[in-house]
Length: 340
Image 1 (cartoon, rainbow, N blue to C red):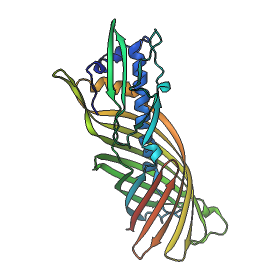
Image 2 (cartoon, rainbow, N blue to C red):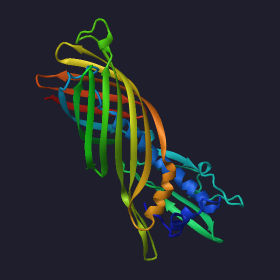
Image 3 (spheres, rainbow, N blue to C red):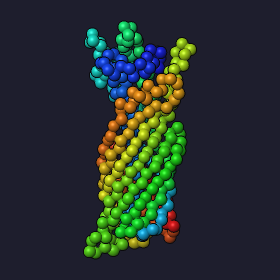
């Protein structure tokens, strides 16, 4: 997964000066941003499912000032259509003044299947040329390779405390934890309010309804299988080692639960998430700053609808929960909860 020519570095080192005119370097920057967005986009979508899971296990709120500590685990299952994407020469729309393409797929084909951040290796190369300062600069580089994983799992700790008026506050924390080359960092808070208390007849084993709002700061770093070595002719411009997806996520859900006896409860929810996320490359060298300056053009927001379904099994001093989330991804959350 190495860039094959030092001329590609010219784009990174000089693109920050080229935004005032629609020259070849600017057009090439747009092509690179499109490729990077398709590569990292599924990782940003997956982050919304990871950050939004495990905030609730019941519509019933804890008693005022009662505290519950939860040890939870998340597992994101990546579908095959999120591990790769198809790119065609038609997607690369930049052309020279003469009409020739700025960038295209190497070889006779006009289409190629290349990895996303979740995908694996690739043999696809991009080729082209740009006119810079009156010189025709040839370009050839390999498509970025992903982490080659279909399941991403990590643990975290969450604390819930009951408040008056059948309201519950939750907070979670996960300092950076690296699992198989993927580093997770997670901080967040949520507030849940039970609405069944306003019904005329409301027993503890009746159907319970509630709503929850949560905010989550979720960072995930995907380490490249092989570093991207930006060097040529004995001169090192740096190395790219990972891509970071930084997500600030809001979630709002309505949920219901029903307890059967003293030991079993089912719950479900329908919600929406809105995430603002940005990308950044990790590594070293003088090229890193200009690369990340260009990547800031990909900062964006995304809304998704999700459905949750789960159950709890109660014991004397703790309960076990399992929750599945369906949407563009399938996500599984499991937890062990202790009241203190």
